[in-house]
Length: 318
Image (cartoon, rainbow, N blue to C red):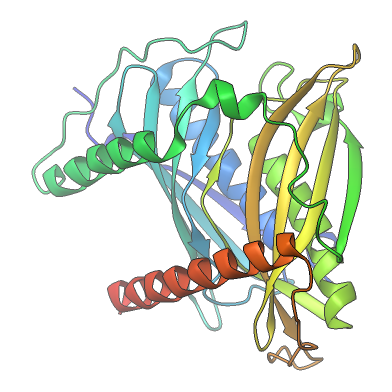
């Protein structure tokens, strides 16, 4: 019998210079890579084999982490389906201004040597006091299945949703052996770090200064990338607030035979900061094309929901 507490895995990280920007603030993408890696260890250990991330729920960076800080990352599984595992991840920094940096829920899928889903035979039996979390995780999985829709259709949708955006870039990255965690599949954490870097470039160019990652919306992963594939990240600005810039990142994997697959589409929000690390205003943004107006209106709705969710998270941590 395995309880939720039995699945907990902890990793410790010390923030070095190459993990941070020139102001000494930890890159959001690096934190995401650490969190996904820790969760991968927890889910692979429980399932007795490899696992990959299939969904990331929205997350918020609640406080800055700087060079020299020690970060503690805990990951645990709170519900197991046939081949999926609902997972919680929580990162805290120690020392000065200690506290929760970011907390999120993720879903992982156990896979075989061919990258196909395999059954997880070890199920979670909640210990006394864990029943509520177990039930919440089960409900979270049910809601997510309704949101994701048809993964096969999404995988084949390789149209570029950023083509009508004025402020956009494309960046291609070759998947190398050191970009994987298990087998020949690109690490989900490494992909999220790549997206953070590309998105920050777009946001910083628009803002005219330094930006840091503020939040990431829900991300569904539809298909993997393998060693030798080229990952094409198409990024464009979709919404601008007083000191924030939202960037859509649409990701397509290109194999050596010319085949393409939609991997995921994510929305990162970046905050423009000054030398003291305080938020700074960004230039006003006025959508001009039909595509920009459509994305801007959707961005307003996303921002409203994210603000409400952030308020609830801060309240729960008090």
